[in-house]
Image (tube, rainbow over all chains, first blue to last red; front, top):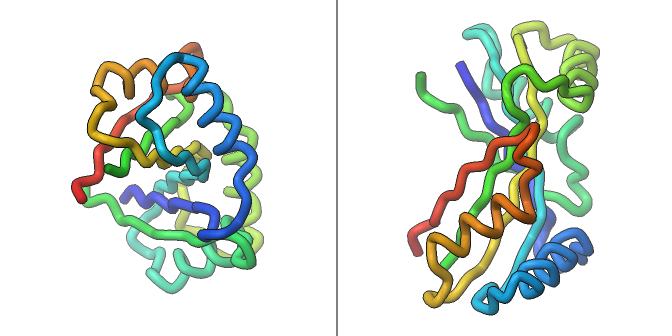
Length: 78
Length: 78
């Protein structure tokens, strides 16, 4: 089963990577973009033995800096 | 309207970040994970003037190295 973990910066945390992307988009001549936030996506292939609690543990201990980031776990139905 | 662009490595491209995460997950004592791939997620807040063609242009020219990465664009319904 495929699982995706999405990690994004919390509101209020400065995002220089997002700002750089926003600036570059305007350099393309596209002016309808109001905000850009950069985050991470981690795709895991797991077997049936992996529990929701283990996924939470991976996401919170390894994949996310919970001081400045939020995460969301999505199980992709096969 | 919110738009998310997901960028992931193409199949066959080595992913040292994903391997490091996989190794760390096993270090937590979780052994049911078969594969890990690390990717990016970019969240954009756009107004109604931004067309699908412009989103494609941003994704392919700025956000993705199309030699080694794929992208997927998702418009989030408000």
